[in-house]
Image 1 (cartoon, one colour):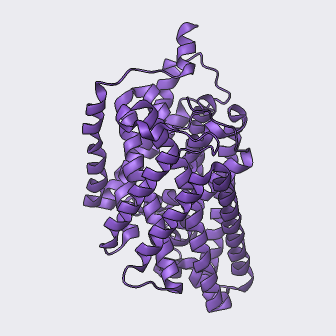
Image 2 (spheres, rainbow, N blue to C red):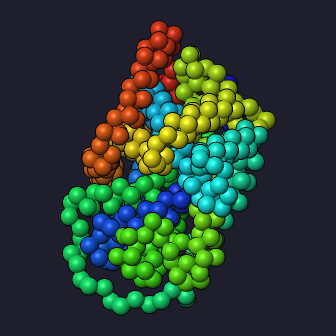
Image 3 (tube, rainbow, N blue to C red):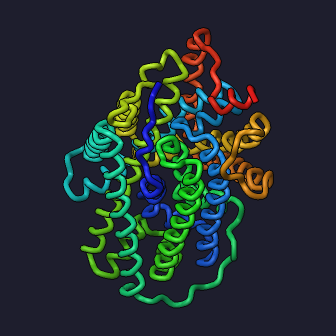
Length: 449
């Protein structure tokens, strides 16, 4: 039986969440959102809406994570709410599609920007991507202490850098004439596309669930960590986009491939653009490191429940880390990088690969809140989602809308991720005859009550 040391403070957990969410996406997605906005006000409303939607989801997760702190996170909720099959397929999807695809995507992003500084040849981006996956995986295998200090350092760097961009934008960027009026809100198709990128940029706050078993006083702190982190992230995103649109204008934002770099170039010259390139690398590394920490926890939880993957369920107590789960996750991410090397854009391929599968399971986790309320009504809930059942219903409705929008956006690319998800079914069937149903201590205690 693994012993989970409560090694993470609320600040450590907050740094991991900020590191997952405030990543390189904020340097790429504002231009996509601007291109699908009616005007400046609509742009800011959509970023505020992204924060509000994330807050609704965080309220649901605050109840789940504070009531059932477990390294499996969503996997644990799905297993106890719906049974073995959905839980396994979710963990399989995280191992082969969601987390590893995100790690590979961020690796390509690091490689693209690092190659601008020093090019390693034809496959320079892929070489850099592989190198950072190996480096960060190695740091986290060494121990959670090393992983969390790396995370706090990178998170501090990205938040400080973003604030510097904001200050330069306010003080140095030229003032623009008032924009021409346009439709206040975009059409439904444009709105759906814009919100895909807005929520992609907000994505990752739910990763808090996977470190809940290692957070001190998790029953009390998890809700605080989630809600405070979402509030801070929303404020940062609104400030950054306000400065970008006021400094560059909606049209220039929508046509820019690197909005923050273009703003800094116009304000202080090429050195400003180089600074942003460095900031993007730090942001991508921050998100990668946090994703590696949380992703391996699901693999570990799956390994404890499925005999054929039992090697993943080994925990190094002294280091406080699931080494085998980290190794396999890193190996799959490297494989995805190799697969993406031959494509036109490895980053875009990984977005297509991950988005639809992510929203399928996000929806199921929202539904699991209802199922767990019904199955375990007497379990103590330190935090209860307000305005139940309307808050989780709203969260589920958003997930349905985003699933439809992501499938429409990715098209046939989404079939790749769904195909990999389906490939886990034979492994589940092979393991089924060895399965002995287990229940969490919380559920066993309630049945005896």
